[in-house]
Amino acid sequence: MTLGENIKMLRESKYISILDIQEITGLSKSTIRNLECDTLNPTFDMIDTFDKIAHAFHMTTDKLRL
Image 1 (cartoon, rainbow, N blue to C red):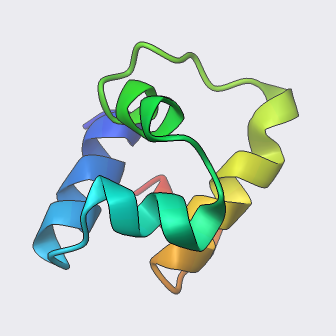
Image 2 (tube, rainbow, N blue to C red; image 1 turned 120 degrees about the horizontal axis):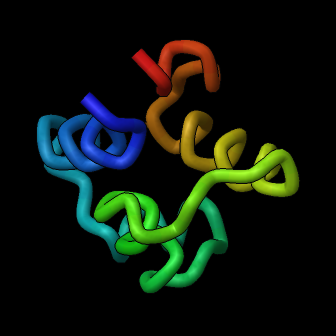
Image 3 (cartoon, helix red, strand yellow; image 1 turned 90 degrees about the vertical axis):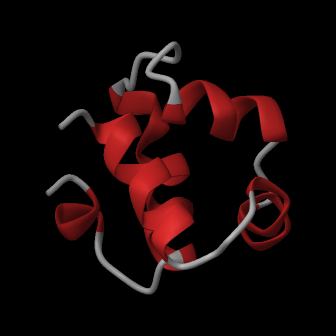
């Protein structure tokens, strides 16, 4: 499973919308959507982005990648 697939699965399993994640993280809808579709390639510069998403799910970034 890719990181994007995992993020989408977590979001859907917790009944959280992209708009909810946007509100919690401050990230744009397109950024979240692109991460979930694996069209946005994660880079070292995106550590803060993944921290925000992990926080929205009440988990660490390590668990987000599983």
